[in-house]
Image (cartoon, rainbow, N blue to C red; front, top):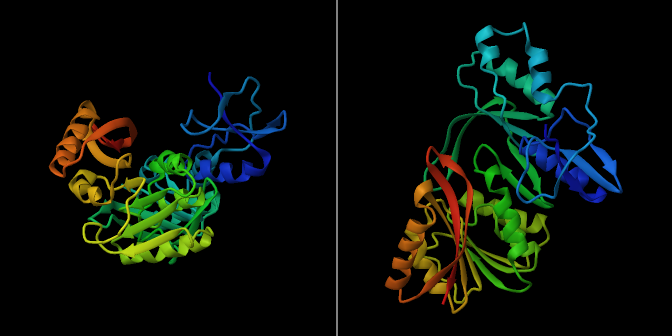
Length: 333
C-alpha cells in the first residue's frame, strides 16, 4: 500500500497543512512527523505542485479522521437514510464550510457536527453550484449568518464572502503556477480578475498587474486583497467588462481565466506585442483538447492579424462527464 506525504519546511508546515485540509486531501489516519529537519504531512494521494515522498514507516493515529469522527458522533442520532447520505467530501474556505446535502432531512443537526469537527463557524449548503456570467454561488446558510472569511493558500490571503463569490479549489495548481511563472517587473493583464485569484500571486512575485473585473462585489474584494497582501502598489484595478476597458499598454502576459475564454480572445489582441504570452482557459471535450481549442484560437488570431504558437497545454480539472477545464499557453509571434 502507498503512503504519500508532502515534504514541507518547518516554517511552511502549518500553512501547507491548512491548505491540504481545505482541499480535503489530508490523510488523518497517519500522524504528521519530522524527518531530517523536514515535516512530512500525510496525504490521500499524490498532488501536482507539491514535493511528495512515499513514507516507509508511517505512524498511524489512534484517533478518528474527520469523516469517521463525524459518523461516530452522528451514529444512532439521525435516521438511517440521513446517515447513509452523509457527505464524505466538502470544501473549506478559511473557517467556512460548503457541503452538498442532497437527500438529508436533519440538515442543521448534521451541519453543526461537521462545523464542530472541522472547526468552522459557518456551514453553507451547495444547492445548485455556480451560475451566470458572474459565476455566482447558489448556496444556502445552514449554520451561521456570515460567510466572509480569509482563505490562505500558498502564502496568499484571499478575503471574500463564500455565499457571494466563487472560489475554485481545483484551480490551486494554476494559481501557484501563475505566481512562479512571472518575471520581476513584467507587465501582466488579468482580463477576469475576480478577487485576485491570479493577479495577487503574480503581483506578490514581482509582476505589475492590470486587473479587470466585472462583478462589483468581487472588485471590492480584489482591491482589499491587494492591500491585505501588501501589493496595492503593483496592481491597478478596473471595474468593467474587459471588452470595453481601455488600457494603453502592451503586456508581456495576459491571463484569461474565464471558462470559455475563446469568446473573448479577440479582445486580448489589443494588448499584445511580439512575444506576449496568453494563458487561455477553456472548457473542452477531453478527446478534442488541446487541438480543437488551439485551432479556434489560431483562427481568431489570424482574424485579428496575428500569428500564435502553442507553447503548452494543461488539463486543470474535470468539469463534467467527458468535459475538462484546460489552459493553453499561447505565444504571439
